[in-house]
Length: 473
Image 1 (cartoon, rainbow, N blue to C red):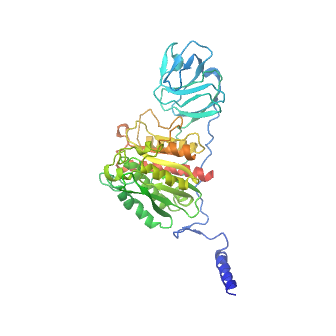
Image 2 (tube, helix red, strand yellow):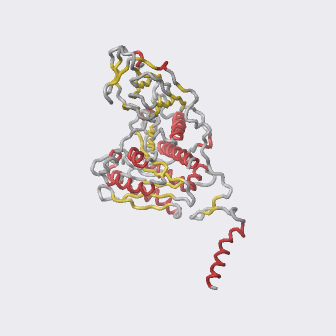
Image 3 (cartoon, helix red, strand yellow):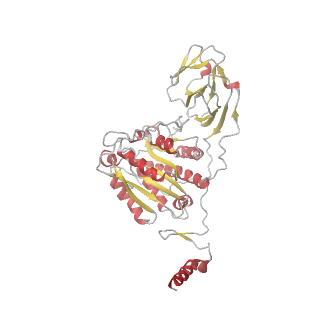
């Protein structure tokens, strides 16, 4: 009798929402008590312009120039000879365009390099030396190989030496189009404070613990049902705890892993990440993009990786003079070991790892590295394009000819965080580096202007990738 009564009460309790408002019509309440409007229209990924490439394809021997030969792999130069049965394809790059190259299986050799001179005008006997890493360098292509080339300079040629003469696919795509759909992009509602001079947002001399206590902990206290944190280990010095913050919506649909503070002298990057996460956590329904992130995406965040440097020296290396972003191959440092061990807990669900830096010595207006043959690459090209035009509209980087550090291919070794994560776990990665170089017109790194631009940059890359993954589960 007692068991039956308990069962009846339980059934009555479960049916109560239906009696009050009808099943499925009650607003959704989160763990923190926030009510999500029942008919809320979540932000969606806009893919009308996401055809990977324009219809214009180049598949012609007209690009073929005889007489080019290569020595052994990675020899550093290409020689022009009188031989007719070997050569290379020469493409005059058009500034601001991206090209996809597909090399068919069975090609004997493929070496693709960028050159500042027209290889077709090279005299017999001359050697063309290339200083940048080859976009593609393979012997005996056993399966179709694809890579991308972005023309970043006004006078630039792509030479693809195949030791043969069969034509192959080159697709073309314009990436620098100043046409955007307004509601797909986020801009700060108000300036972000500075981390220097008046220190209206924070102080670039803060220790790692002060960054967390002043910027992350107040947000966690406001949202205790949404944000948790945990210690992921001690750093290499043994003096400092390393923390991760996990932002878990009640009904999340995708997971993103964010990392900051790899280099202690890149304060703008890890302070901007703190502001980004605050804005997401505090998002209201009227901010459609951020509110969608708040309720649809789980974020796993390491706010400061190099806790010793941020706390004591604000330099690039850690306590034993190691650059952590060169340690992920051998994992000799405790910081990199802790990150990888923590990532492994979420690897099966993580759709992307994003690593935030600043490019203080760069001479480019946009500095982003991402794996450009993954499905989400188009979201990053689109965001690169948008941010480039945003910088130009604000007068940053005006007049420069080198657009960005978007790579022609993504071949980072395991020693980098991005290479290790992609090569070991198959998780797409992106390095987002906001430019703070004043000599090409960007604001001083600790200023309110730099912080505002860095937050906008990080946020839009997060938004576009999040919306892409939500639309492509």
